[in-house]
Amino acid sequence: MGFTNEQIKAIEESGKNIIVSAGAGSGKTAVLTERVLNKIKNGIHINQILVLTFTRAAANEMKDRIREKLLSNKEYNKELSLIDSAYITTFDSFSLSILKKYHYYLNLPKDISISEEAIINIEKNKILDSIFDKYYLINDNRFNDLINNFCVKDDKDIKKLILEIGNKLELKININKYLDNIINNYNSIYIDKILEEYKELFKEKILDIEDILNEISYVVDSEYYDKLINSLSNNFWEVNNILVKLPNLPKGSSEEVKKLKEELKRKIDNIYKYNIYGNREEIINNIYESKKYVSLIIDILKEYFNKLELYKFNNLIFSFQDIAKL
Image 1 (cartoon, rainbow, N blue to C red):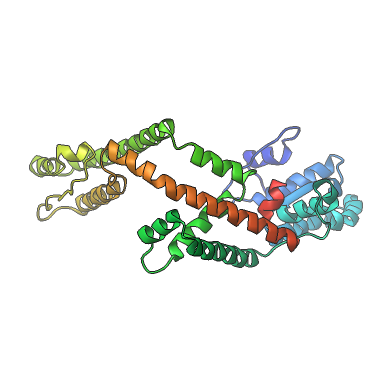
Image 2: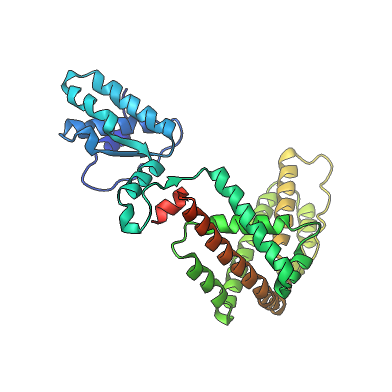
């Protein structure tokens, strides 16, 4: 097949790290296969090249394509005998092989394995359930307030949220230190930073609305545009939570105008999500009030991770995230 100049560069570039970004169906596998062959042509044996993919299917396809290319040229018969032992595999399989080979450096047993995600997820739920059961018994005021204020029928949503946070934290090298830093940051400097970020975010939302208004001004008459502007009172632009009722469009308005008005309404509705916290003093009080909930969730997460690590070690199973951290 013919390659573009960019693809040829990706195939032949050498002596430095390169990143190739390409969409689906753009020939990434073909380019990588050709890059491997180019290395072989330059005297590097196939079993001296490391090729990693995200799935077994992709790794097998890559190996088959390279084998087909080698079969078409008798000069590469020796390489054919080496391809089955070549490092063309998945990221997690390769990482696990390295971990097993050098397990003694990490004080780990040799017979560790990568766990099925479904099994780990079941255990995560069990661990979190046991932690919640404990808190129901010890009568922690923070926990009681959390359940009373944020749960309606059951605690499923709170548990789901904590599990989602836990999943995002798993790639952190030192989770406990990271969690400690969060609670230690509850000070005036931290709050000022949050408020500034909130202010900038709100400004961006307001600018979005102004952009839509600008588009509308070109496709409606001045009378309707004035009504529209008047409906967005000064109070709205000053970030007060005031409901806005947009004026009805004139009869016979075009589809373009209707779509722009719908987009304007959507953006106004969306901005209320960022406009429910009141004035600065109320926001600061809410942040300090949330500290007890944050400290509780941090305590729960610490216990959750300690139990999860103990479970993994006792059962000699690790996730790919664990191996990546090691």
